[in-house]
Image (cartoon, rainbow, N blue to C red; front, side):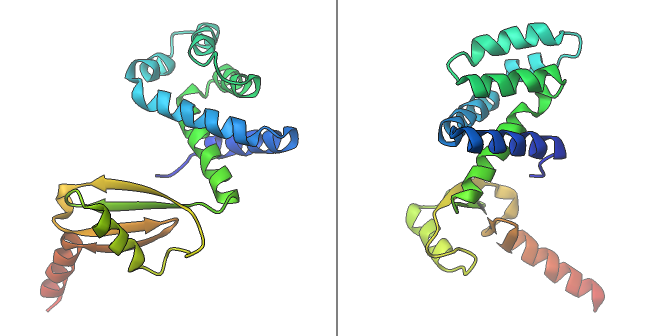
Length: 179
């Protein structure tokens, strides 16, 4: 997923501030909560995306929803809404999480398969690749997409291994068309 420049800039500003104030760990945890809330609440997203509701009302609602967060996190949310960027709130929080994980050496891995795999099969796929750093932690996200027909697509950071049946069939089709 591509992250907007807006999300990257706000996340970097928040990271710089939390590093200076020593609040990175606490805000990291809170940004995970923001992502979770924004992912689960369709109504909240619709509310934030409604253009005819003014920023003051959106800030009031956000203050109630995120009242358990630290002052730093609440101020970020208010600033984002005040500048009309509330549609980017989830992306900003996720980008902040990604930046902190990058600093801590956590690799983000996405494994896409046609069917649900067992833990042993997932471990075997991860061991078979040289994209993973042996000494690093990783955050694994498994997606099930039947349209790939079989095999898997493994994405580690910005590198990808596509061992899906759909891709292989597409390559065979291309080869037949060329000959």
